[in-house]
Image: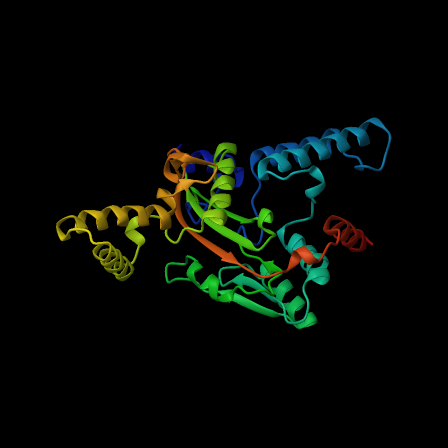
Length: 328
């Protein structure tokens, strides 16, 4: 499905305005996001017909507002694939959300000597809370740099990861691409995978595929996405080793070349993600598993030592308690 810019602009009434004789191009959503017509209409309906306290009354309007509020929570849960509505916490905005996590989660889990990773591309709301937290507890704030074209230098992420890493906090949004981060709890939380997918739309099927993909990467440990990424030096060294092995086996020189090329093909299937047998169905490779619904742009797989799994605190309760404090 093509990305229809005009259709999306039409959802936002403010974008029909002109500024200095030109259509408005609004690029400050990191500070204040404009509202689509559906949100404006719903808020208008609320204030005209049904404005009442949520979870605080037994009369018709309060109960109706409570039902609407919880329905919105369920819609968000489905959209992001959360396991329960108890995982969805509404705040006044992204700034409040990040501060809430930094003060509740960060205050509980980040200790002196730990590291927090963010990036150069972040809005201040995703930098300052972590700076303050690190200063307060004696942790180190590490930053993923950018390429000249503004994309993250994900290859630098490996150098920043270690066993003392409670928090990785950064944003990556690009039209038609789905970034996915998963820590595989089936392996004791020791393996993390970050995948960037290119796809025409992000739907439930793509989300399910991305989940299977990161599970595969965690288990199969590929080194490259596709064969053209294998460094020539690595390939030549592999070819030399395989050639010598074949000669040591006493194979005739005239068939050694064919044997080596066959083993190189096997090598590609071992180290290249798209050619690996899919761990959940070895009869197909990862390319067939994706079925053309998404393409892998790049991935990062990393392992770390014992960490968060040692700390068995109730994060949901911590956040609820912190919110209660903020309301006072």
